[in-house]
Amino acid sequence: MPEDIRDKSYINNEDVLGLNFIRDPGIYFYRRHYREGLRSHIMEVLDSEAVESEKKGIIIDGFRWYPRAEPLKMLRIFRKRFSTLKDAEEELKRVRIIQTYLAPDHLAESQEFLVDYSRHGEREILLCGLQEYVQGQILDPWSLLNRDHLILLRYDMGFDNTEDSARISDQWIRSVREGADNFIKKLKQMIEETGHVPDLAGAGNLILTRSGNIKLVDINNVSRVSFDPIINLDDRGYPICDKSIEALSLIEQKLLGRSSLRHAPIYKTFLDPERVKEVRALDEKFQLSIAPTISWPGSS
Image (cartoon, rainbow, N blue to C red; front, side, top):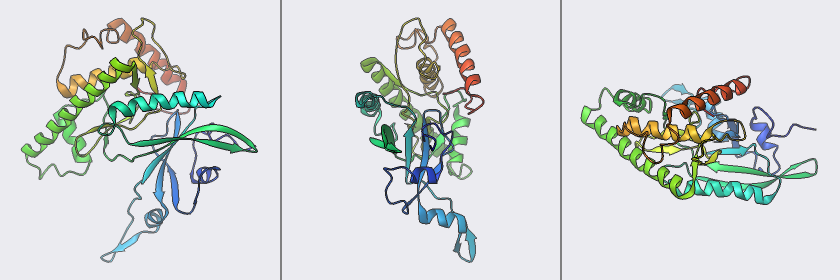
């Protein structure tokens, strides 16, 4: 019997085209995205003609160019199994919470859908998502995030910093910080009103766009926020709530220049030095547990 697609380490175009709910296989090509994760397969949805141009090249002014095909959408195939429709609907409720508070400015637009995954006459519930492709650079809360770092990210997005005046660069950085302020406010409101937080710690989960906006692109892991002394772990053994709150505090410190956060109500529990030390040990244990299959420095 063919391996369950949720159990495969990686999948390719043929795997996706073999799914019973995928139609018109000649229209799109599916390519594994470099941010393949523990919780879902992430596939770029590409125009087949654009892929052909990427492979064979096109002639422009007598020169052959090989333009990389740009994703139209991102297809997520969740690895999580659901025993009942109710379980799947509960998962979708958590996704809806994030959408309510962060969309559209700070969340990659996504349409989640449940399908009958058919294998040899057996049918199971499979959760998928068709998500907006967000262009930009990864914003890592554990990186410097100072002016020089932001300017470097801007350059990597295609801006010519040698031609930009300092005034234009400073305007862009101000936009980044204003966007970060709004992003933080929305997240804090979500935590206070719903008791949930998305995964802010995963590598590549936050993207800084050309407009200076921060967008969350990974909605696979939504955690309950518990102020209990016991550190809660997700189903993979990762302290996702603590690490996400830590990531939030780092963004606030570095982009907004707020240094005294330890005693703020939302951080008081999670930034306690002894708790932080314990979380770090749990994080290291988690990294060791996934090292043979995937390498994500400091994240889930």
